[in-house]
Image (cartoon, rainbow, N blue to C red; front, side):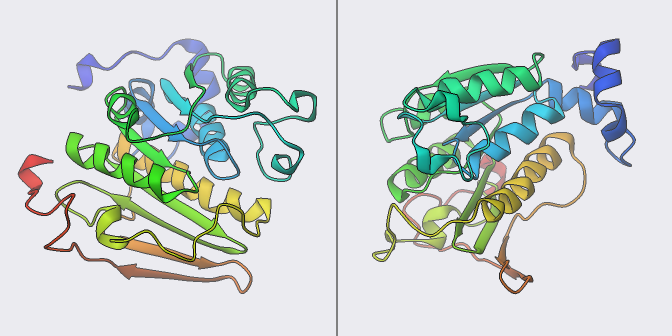
Length: 256
């Protein structure tokens, strides 16, 4: 019910004025964003930029999860990490930077990566999940928790100057296990990366989350967006559910 949405303060109206001019979005879209919670897994070149844009846009709560400490090689793309924070926990650097940007956003900082042990509990805290994790073990855990709990999951990834994005709506679209039934054997933890490539797909993922929450525009649900940023070629291809998927087969739209 719109009447149940939290009202905006005068300060919030001033901060978000320009985005509330967007057709279909308006003040009600901003209220929905204020009333929402989003989980961002990993705060690297992709996830960190997603979190930064969502904080700037006024999401009510961000749950951010990332283990480990800041390294020099992080600094070419991870916009929430700073040189003075080298050797300190990544998630604390991220929380500090996000709160500097927008003190109105609640930041729940989790100093660990997503796993089969913590995914269900972290997903239960939020309305939408954005996957910026590089490892398929983490991505599969998030996917299963999102599908089980019927929550939208925005999947995005990049390599070199290529990127891809899709939005998973349980019961309606393929899940990650449909798209990747097996762990890709060629996938490695370290790979070529240009920070602006990460930021490009991250900006699109943040916009997907905002659209889902506010009810504005169309999402990439049921489609995979492929981007070759070396040549600036973009493709949008339909993707199909697998009837034998061990995670989402048998799930209907009514259950989502």
